[in-house]
Image 1 (cartoon, rainbow over the protein chains, first blue to last red):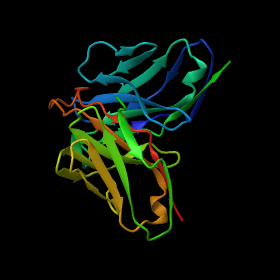
Image 2 (image 1 turned 180 degrees about the vertical axis):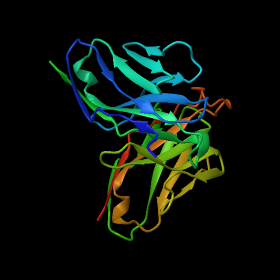
Image 3 (image 1 turned 90 degrees about the vertical axis):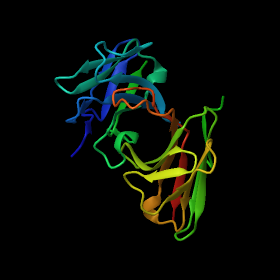
Image 4 (image 1 turned 90 degrees about the horizontal axis):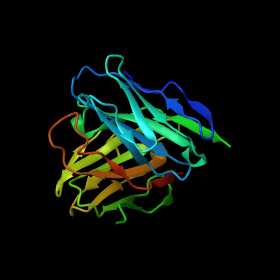
Length: 118
Length: 119
């Protein structure tokens, strides 16, 4: 069963506007962690932001924020004031205690390709 | 700090050949990981290590071996490469977990990747 679902294969956003990238997850655990990574065309994986399941406030990191709705099991990434350099693949990931590797494994979604239009 | 580095960046192998991918980190991280990324997919864990001299299997370990002789290095070996192992390989490292599933202490930081093609 798919643990992380990113329903938007591709998204377009106008420069300087905000954009939300969707992520829903499936877990029966009460304690878990959610991560977002950015992969530009150069290929590296860049850590953006983290949200713990017991965090009462949504995580923020500069222009990145996480819209965490625990009851809906969603952890959407919001990028404010988009820049051309934000064009990249974005992956949502969850620490997956139920996997064979336990808490050491991150389970990734298939990603959303964001294109920022000048 | 260089962070996490990987050697080589690109490699082409013929079926049956062997090779070793090297990962090095200078952040004094306890944990290290090897992932592979295939087109249209996220990353999948191959093997991981929670300390020098220890290794464990991840989600897709078949056809790979690993060693962690030094804390800063994590090697991924392919003994007999197959076309199905054509992929982009990422190494990552993190601090040790504090035992809480909802903690961000062991956030994983990735290297630049190695693109491997097996013909």
